[in-house]
Image 1: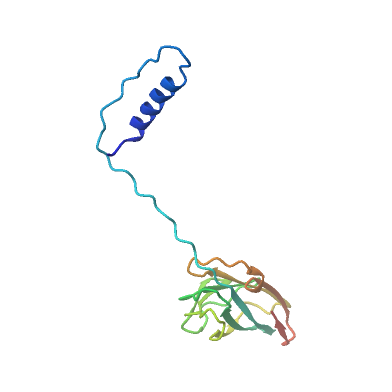
Image 2: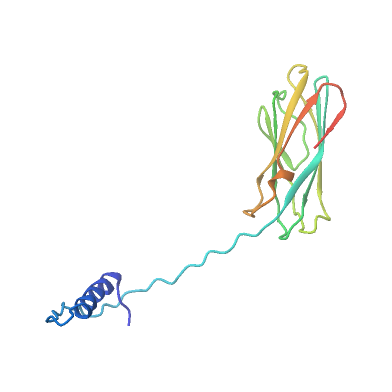
Length: 176
């Protein structure tokens, strides 16, 4: 038998009146006839997979050139079909940049790169190497690296995929 929410409330109120009478005359509330209605099937949300994406590498600034070498890995427990890493710069890039196929320039200061599949055991990390040209000759550049998308997985350790690196214009490698 299917019962609507409204019918259940009326029946519950009638039962409360009868039960709570304590010796008084019970007044029977009219009980509507059962109505055939669809009972919603409970929807169970699936648990999001958990992954530990990490990005490590180094940044180097020389003249107008900025190099970013990046290794993205996943330390599990779930494998990922792909992730997207975002690189943000404190200085503008000059026009369109030549980049690997996995990367695109989102705006004058942002580059997005897809990693491709990242197995859960961290064994097959994805490497990216970018050589970018900056507008002007800054004395230093701040590079911010983070995961912007990881397929909806939960990452309980964002400290190894969110970095901020200050690279003075020395040509030296600054590791993250």
